[in-house]
Image (cartoon, rainbow, N blue to C red):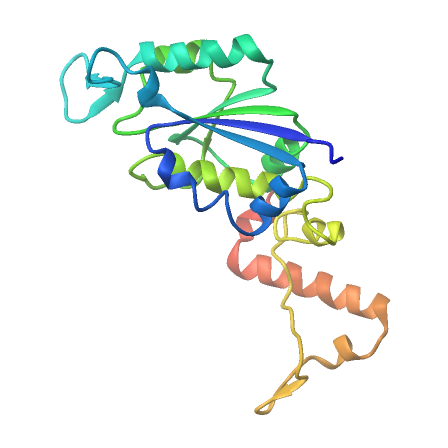
Length: 230
């Protein structure tokens, strides 16, 4: 019997958007192994009235609808009555940008609840009362937070021991040490005159690691020099 290391609950307006990302590839294998347990909660099931209303116009005027406080609060309160969450995360563009350090930290948690935004966002009182961490995946706006949630889940789950066959692979990814990854090559060693660097064929592993380290620093300096400041 496998041990479930992490449970993830996601509150969403569009549960269908999360079906494909969580039913293929590494996420699906992690679920099959019992390493993660993902539950999707349709916010419309907590909507108000006969039409299951979940949004309304914003006070003060302005374009765009806002997700109402009552449906979200009812859903979160129900989930909180069933278990304790290490983090209650709100996916929103007006937050700190997701980075590898955050992914590493979240991969050590047992229970995570994710609220996905929609329209103009959620009533601020939800953020004030329930949310423990707010995360953006970049300086741009999506139609909803579902795809952002999928990005977060994928980036965290792959770090859980046993999810990836070679666990050391994740430890050598870009950003793990504030450096971009060095160039990588595979067979053939010579393709139409384009040759693999000799050092990678030498079998001299200390030299290979030195080369990789140098190239990682060089690539970071060229593409993302801001990472070196950290």
